[in-house]
Image (cartoon, rainbow, N blue to C red; front, side, top):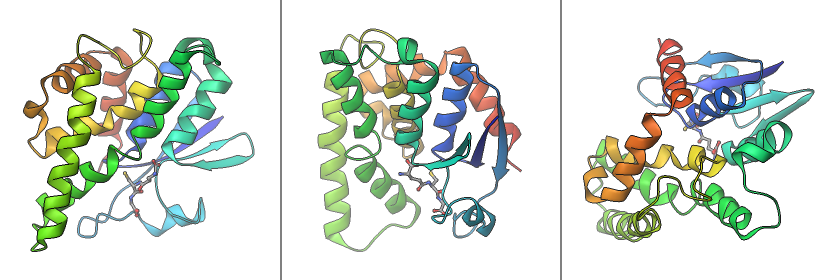
Length: 206
Ligand SMILES: N[C@@H](CCC(=O)N[C@@H](CS)C(=O)NCC(=O)O)C(=O)O
């Protein structure tokens, strides 16, 4: 059975949603962040040296990194459903968004989130975060013009990976600045397996 090592309020929600979407048998092992440092408890280091979440135990292998976990699980269990056919332009675009979610989109989103939690006195950092956030989110907003999903007019792993980005935008009060991302976020929230993932996440938070 697949085991997901899940940390509350984390990217691991992506993997709960994905596992629900795949309909495979799995169990969640839940961990709680330190309320002050927001770091994961030391027990997670016994599963993977970084001590971060998500981490998945799949057969006899331990996998970290939400993007790699998403690609692996989709390849293994639902390549025809949650990804476009390999070798097509849609597939290349799918993979681009899947990685974008954890790289170009994540850096300015997290910087802005962290600055909102503890406003920095560094002009460089706040200026960089604001400029990058606007550039990257305008790109996403334009890409979503007239679309319900990022690629191939259907839900794919790229949407599951990207779903965490509008969650951060919502938490920093920036979602309304990007109407297409806001519409996309609302659409994703109507999907039953995403709703189930939210319920499971709430259930596992102490
Ligand atoms: N790039 C990794 C990031 C993993 C990561 O930083 N997870 C955060 C939660 S969103 C975490 O475990 N933070 C607690 C800690 O670092 O102790 C991924 O996509 O899985």
